[in-house]
Image (cartoon, rainbow, N blue to C red; front, side, top):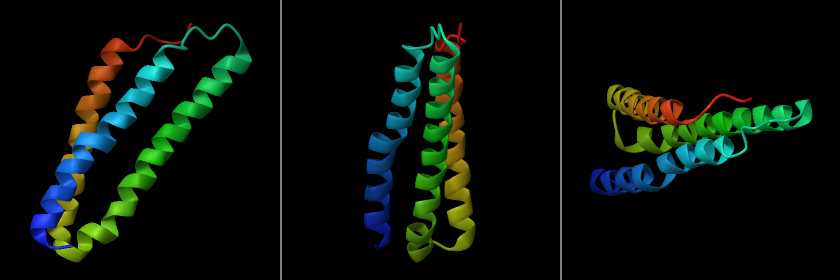
Length: 100
């Protein structure tokens, strides 16, 4: 992957994969009326699974990024992506009610 390809790849990721993580949170919010312990456990397991998938997805890009960017820029890219994710999670937190 060359730098121009990297930029296109990054834009595509931001448009497709980051919103998917947020959509999972919204989908879980629809089910937050956990009337039973079993349903609450299921929701907890799903949320942990989503967060784990996010981390694995981000980790899978490090080798790809490292092929076209120096280590400092890879680190900076991951920091920026984490800031974007923090904003998404912050906005979702304002909308998603706590489990009842």
